[in-house]
Image 1 (cartoon, rainbow, N blue to C red):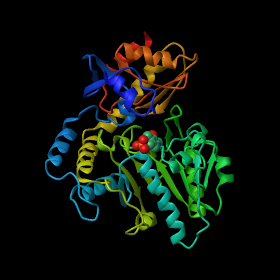
Image 2 (image 1 turned 90 degrees about the horizontal axis):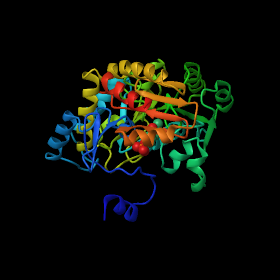
Image 3 (image 1 turned 60 degrees about the vertical axis):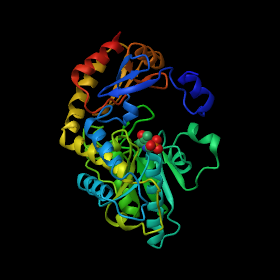
Image 4 (image 1 turned 30 degrees about the vertical axis):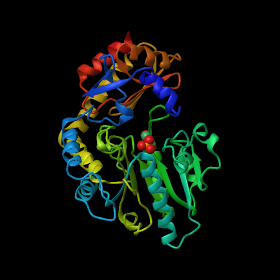
Length: 385
Ligand SMILES: *Cc1c(COP(=O)(O)O)cnc(C)c1O
């Protein structure tokens, strides 16, 4: 059987996969089983921030794999607190809980804010406000937080206690918040629904409402975090600090790891027994993440994201048939006047460029943060063709 036949017969059909089998990657390129080379502007959907097989991450994984991969979280290991300090120092947060994915990081955040309210003697303070068109992951509470019925309707009943407001609608947010609000959760830039950045007014209103009602402001930075938006964290584009922030995607440079970070009173809410993850924060994942995060910070890749991102958006705006180009840093959406996105993505793949179509009108670009202007030129040339 071919790989595609094996996949079709034995793997659950949760993905409408494109007919290509990738076997190897290096930098901004991946290679299929026939040795064809592709320029990768999807990068694992914002996971391969340093490109494919970044040497420092590979070295850290190999070395840690031969030393200690896993022990129970009932014992101390060296990489986990080192990574926690690195993330805390870089973000202004105080403490970190480690898990394995974005959805799990968000689950930790939901439990954290619910417990914080109960610990403060407010058991009725349970509501979490999120945005329409958001994306927070695929576990049951995460799809509940995700304000898109298409991800929810087959799986009801959903988790209770979630409320939605249109993204960037300040007055809707004000009417939704009240004494029962225990958190407001937002992505600084919505990725999954076509790359829409929050307005400063919207995020400051969220911050003010959280302060007014004693609720926690959660930023889901699973996609926007770690250089993607041209700042190390998305919230730094707005000068609005969340109480809780979730990370995953780029964090491990391709290795699975998620994190829920919290500051001030939220940093010390969890006590032994409240929350756990068997694999979360194991030495292998943390070694990969230490190597990845250090390289993103020390290698100047955040500035590269800002500079090459601006260059890329400029070039996209000059393409024929473009309605709007939007985004921050290297998190970019290009909306076309005609419904050409799916055809463009399929044709681009044929010509050796990987891009992601969102619906019929939008292409999403989340290339590695190490991408160059030359590679952007090449990608734009293929799209123009
Ligand atoms: C990808 C993503 C998630 C889900 O992460 P998983 O690792 O797939 O669970 C959550 N929130 C945002 C903003 C994402 O982009």
